Image (cartoon, rainbow, N blue to C red; front, side):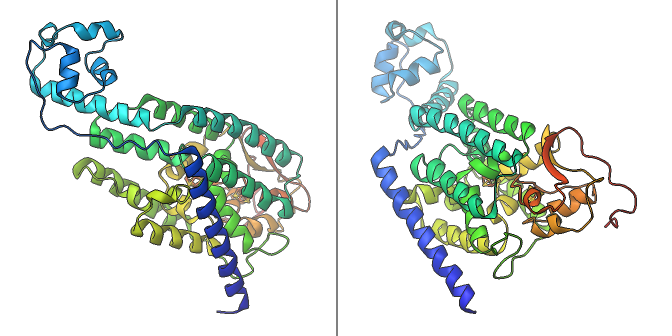
Amino acid sequence: MNQRHFANLGILIVVAAAVIFLSWLSMNIWGSNKVETVQLISLQYNKNLTLKQFAIENKLPEKVVLRIFNLKNTEDLNKTLSDFPVNQEKLLTKTNEALAIYAESLSKNWIKIFVKFVLWFLFLALIFVLILKNKITPKNRKWFYLVSFVLFGIILGSDPSPMGTIKDAVTLYAMHHVLFIPRFIALAVFLFMVVSVNKFICAWGCQLGTLQDFIFRLNRNKRDTKGLVKQYKVPFAVSNSIRIGFFVLFTVIAFVWVFDIVEYIDPFKIFNPKVVNVAGWIFIGLILIASLFVYRPWCHFFCPFGLFGWLFERFSFVKIKVKYSDCIACDACSKACPSTVMDTILKQNKTIPDCFACGSCISVCPTNAISLSSGKREKVPEGKFDKK
Ligand code: SF4
Ligand code: SF4
């Protein structure tokens, strides 16, 4: 290890400690609404009980009982169970499903979520305009990442996040057989963002994504073209295979063993340090250290939204495009690109890895041949680049 390694490690420790401490402080101010889902194994049942008595006997909130019987009016709680002929096993299942939805809904701070989405739209719109004007420079980009993870992570917390929408949708369905509609609305909004402007939400809005990007850029030269300590571009076939494998494993384990493996290592919990366990801290530490040398390791190797976002990216209306008549094939953009994606865009390989719309390629291009713009990508002129 040389001096640069130690300097990087020192900065990383300071950043991580600051994120953990400030997030802990922020969580104490906001308070945590985390509500554990209760699973009942039996019910106190007598068909002469009113629904109100049924709620008391089974220690169920009235809202849960209303949901079980599809009722809106609290006056309906005076009806008796005999008014709702249902077999007891089915009633137990419906009760557990209603309890899971109730816990999920109680654990949300809806004001915070609303504020977060509004700020996401405003912040992403600002960055979009800056990229269009080629105003994101190697100097100021770190500040934007810093603002993003401070605002959307430290201040507004680990949830919601693009990753959480997919992870929690899978686990809620696998473990409690319920679909939590607000999660799907959030997922639809995030995927709509991907279809609109590439992976812009991941690039500039995701609290963990921007934290990893910030750390990665700390280990870059002044022009943001290469690592101060060597950085590696992992072949996409390798990272994506691991990511697919991880998603399959997580889904199978959730359905078969009713166990959520991501919950134990979820690196988004750095923004909610009170709930991180030993395995979680080890994993978070490894992800942060790896971020110095590999671009967004969690996004490329593990993130379920990273995977789904990548699948939807090909339909993106606005994306990174090259004007080949202006391109002098100097390769500056693919060298500056933190992953292998620019190389595949230039040469029009069939599989294009995740493009995080970071704009590094735009700012290094000496002829301004690269843009973040709408429409299809141009076809590469024959012979301009050697096909891989
Ligand atoms: S891929 Fe990265 S940036 Fe996108 S949701 Fe996952 S962690 Fe966040
Ligand atoms: S450098 Fe360009 S191609 Fe590479 S990830 Fe950033 S925006 Fe995408």
